[in-house]
Length: 119
Image (cartoon, rainbow, N blue to C red; front, side):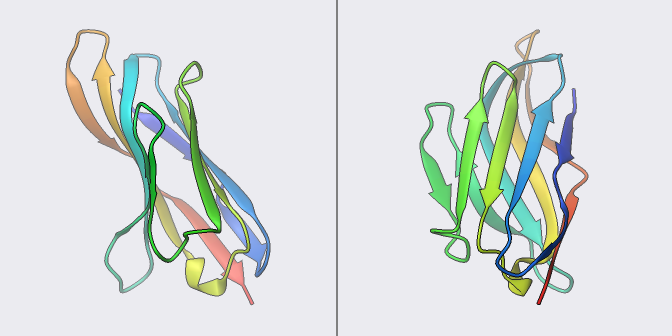
């Protein structure tokens, strides 16, 4: 079981990006999903999370500028980020709490996708 992140890149301040996190076919169900980020020299921090029921939680640094969503049929989680600032530059990691088809529970992390915001 694994996940694939995409959507990172270079964007100017004020711009927007949408990150995607797609779970592999062997994953039966995604429970809680989250996006985290880690800037150079800083600790990893929560950007946003979403429960299976759709309840969301956002880190203070992105609140009001980002939206996390999920498409259960596609086994994909999205992070829409608007009004990006240079301070948003970081590696963004997807985290999925999943159930496999054999009922095994796993906590998966992606390799990260880099977001760079230029001033």
